[in-house]
Structures are given as C-alpha cells and as structure tokens.
Image 1 (cartoon, rainbow, N blue to C red):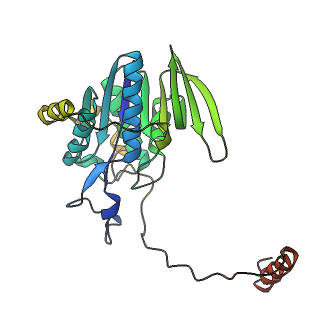
Image 2: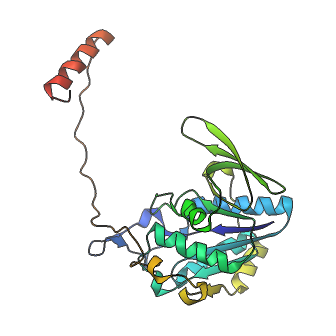
Image 3: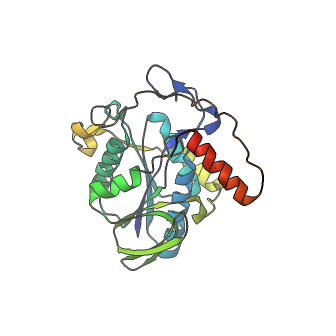
Length: 260
C-alpha cells in the first residue's frame, strides 16, 4: 500500500518566541524539530509498510529549512520526501495549509492512506488533518491509537476523553494519530547516511496548480489579532468543615458574588 504522511517542522517548545508586531512565531534563529505527533504518524506508516508492503512518502509545507525535518524522516526509513515551498504560502492558516497539502497530494497521484499527527505543538488546532480529508472528499478517523488495514478496509481505534471508539471505513482515507499509538524509532546509521545524500524534491505553487485564493495569507479566512500571556490567577479560598456545612458555605459564596 502507498502511504502519504504530512508532517510539520515546528520550533522547539523551549524556544518559542512571538513577534509582537506581526503576532506570528519567530522562526529565524530558533531551533526546530519535527512535530512530535508527526513522528508517531511516520512510525505508524512505516509499521504498516513493514506489514503490507508498499511505499511511504512524507510531505511538508514550509520554508527551505524544513528540508531538514524531511531528512529526519528519511533517516527513520521513509521512501520519498517532498517539500512544498513558496512565498505564496506565507501566512497560511489551517484552511490554506490543508488546501495546499491536499493539492500536493493530488499531484503526487495514487495513494491508499494519508496519516497525520493529531495536531502541531505550535498551534494545537488539530484542524489540518481533517481539513485535508475535506478538501479531498475522503473519510477520516481522528485521534487514532491503533490502525489496522484489511484489504480495502481501514479499522481504527480512536482515543476519546472517556472511552475508546472503534470505527471502520473504506480506503483511501485520512487518519490522525495520538502519541499513544507507538514509540517512534530512532534513525539508523544507514538511514542517516542516506538522508545526508538525499536531495529533497521541492514543489512550488505553480507546480501544485492550486487556486491562489485558497493559499497563503490572502487565502486564509482567519487571522491572529493579538497574542498575549494571560495574567496569573489569584489565590483561591478553601472551605473547611463537614460536607453539608461546606455545601452551605459554597452556596452562600455563590449568592454573595451573584453568580446565581
């Protein structure tokens, strides 16, 4: 089976900086890593390939330096990588990002499964994977903690807040995975040597034949108006006494503050 994995290069969480004028992440000079959830997506794809055969292709949208993130996945054992990079993509929100990735996937041709991490740690929206599914008109299963493929049927165990849910759909499909699905493998020495020699394939806006009205800042229906650090919360109050007494005190406090 042919699997496509979408990844993102993100700033190391210990070095996150915000440009106060543009309200965007400062990426220049900041250490970057492969989004951790996307490493789980790559591992899931590699395990499926080892079981069913086929190929694993990893794509990312980003500036030229995002090629380093792709080389990390080559060292893990993927077959092909594609960097979608163009100034026309600058300022993309999740709508424009998922559109650009979906257009790239269309240009790549045949595939059986698309896997994404559940969310990027620099945005935490969990919208790009489902967005790709919508643009491509494919069934989707999110928050996957287990993936099984039987012929043209996909079976996914979804990790929800209070329980797990098992769903089935036909391939091709889109899946987003949680970290509990696996433990990503470390790059092998052979893989690192291959990554060093690999020339990353690049595609620009013209090559993916996307509609400019859906790409970049102009194609993004959302925008960041302001970013700020919330003020620290004040100290709370502990109510002591027997349970019934505490309830009476709590009700009195609520009425005093006119909450009810």
